[in-house]
Length: 190
Figure 1 (cartoon, rainbow, N blue to C red):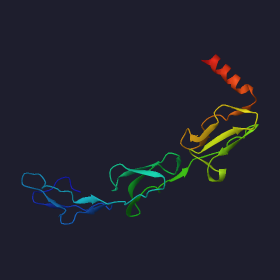
Figure 2 (figure 1 turned 180 degrees about the vertical axis):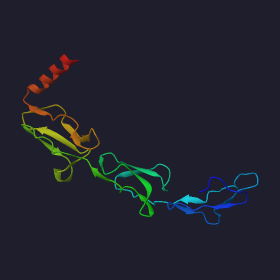
Figure 3 (figure 1 turned 90 degrees about the vertical axis):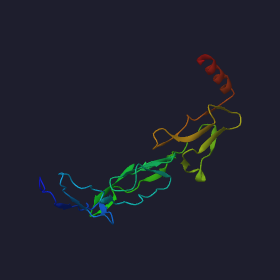
Figure 4 (figure 1 turned 120 degrees about the vertical axis):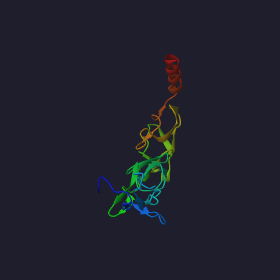
């Protein structure tokens, strides 16, 4: 490449491999008498990486477009955790434009089996009462002669968008004294 060019000389442009030349445009500019270059329209346009894919239970956020240099973010729906990268970029590699990473997988958040309670049981959940998916509810009941102390209903939730946890501590089944103890607890703490 020269540092100066004489008046009347023309220079041709070649598009980088990540770009296509625009049909109908001559990729040439000329040094004019006033020592400026003739107008230089955009001879090249960025190539597209195409659709990055849409994983199930995932929202794809296209920040600008799908062309060379663009970035796309992936966000899992509520109740699902991201397994893989949260973003990808359209780059040039192996003589073509392509996404730098594969789309992630959004896996359902699961809770461990809810704890058993003495003098009671729980019902509910999901798929055959073996798997407890995000937002599934379990209801505790007490055996005859016992009263529930605490919230009878708990649900599967997540505090970090990855691991499933139960929304509250499990209740207890107590004899007749449960209501009196709850009243005393409320009275002395408020």
